[in-house]
Length: 260
Length: 260
Image 1 (tube, chains in turn orange, blue):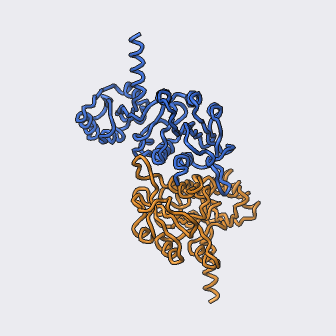
Image 2 (tube, one colour; image 1 turned 90 degrees about the vertical axis):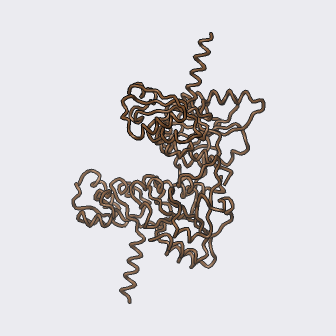
Image 3 (tube, chains in turn purple, yellow; image 1 turned 135 degrees about the vertical axis):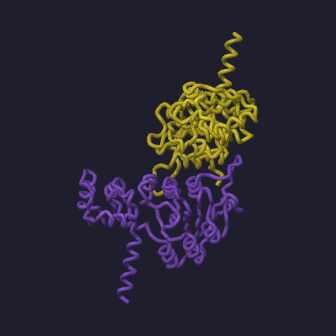
């Protein structure tokens, strides 16, 4: 029994790590002393050029464990052989977590505290994902649910487009969004899907409550399985017959609503 | 004297045309019966493939004059030899105009009517320009000032990113932004520059008035000559220590302020 619990603990720990990759993102993360780096992974095939030497020196100065791997093993760690450039870094960010852990944490608090999250469904453009993170962070959203399936993943482009805000934002991971939303619903969280034919307008959603706004794909909207988990479908009132806006703009309008 | 006035009238007419180019944008514009097309320009070197035949047939059906040019003359019309694909179309959009014409029009109205415009300074990314137009249109802004110098120009990427809203939005052209803003100031228009170190917050700007919000380059902000024309510098209050947002997101927050 002890072994099992050890395994689960270990799994939970690894799930709590954000692995970033690419020379520039890793170098910049190591240069930022406020980012708790856990382990540095390098491909043994890397040429030891100036950037790699700089990365190694920073990791050593910060007493971060350095592991060397063959190319194939490294690509299993980065999960992106094409873009990792032989470098990956595990970050132990306190704000990077899972939907399950967040729900457990909320349930353990005696009095329900209101929160507002954005959940992303089918957001495949990394530029948009980065902009959503940046706007949600600036607007004071409590976090973003980013499923492992069907969305862009955190890659160098996303990190760049988020202009550093990725590391300040609560990012909650799950496998499939519909399942995670189902679990949130059981705890009484309002699930609100954005849709151009939503019957409720965003202005009608007032007061504080545990609440999730679901943003769908720009072309197809939220998928059926996710729509079934929504308590209500919302639209943003638009002028001049405009039917939709860029998804990052929608995220910003939700995050700043009532503030401007 | 008559000749001069004829020349000026002609010049004013040509300034009032929006010339778009590229096979897809031109084809889509011709397919939209609500867009008043003036003249179609084709390079005589074009291969008469399906798309060109379609474009010609649509122009003929709509009784639009078709002019044939050599490659060099066509690129003088499109002003973009690399992207015009041998096709350009003059649109006579009632909403496409110049700052001078807009100022004259406002002065001729006895009672001052309030308006709110966005002015763009150094917005070089076509994706951002398209998103700004889309958000400003959806939020009900009265128009966008787009200078000929220092900004992205209306090209196929901008038209695509604006998702058709370009043709519904008042676009006011000028040569240099600082001069145009100077002319607006003389008529009592408030010029408000967005800046991360602006002393006024956006929430303090209430009530209706003739007003222009100036958006600067994402990296450098508004340029000095433009900043000198601003009555005040504004910032948007942001949380979590975020210092700036994407310029299209900023445009959306201004356009929707007080509405959400």
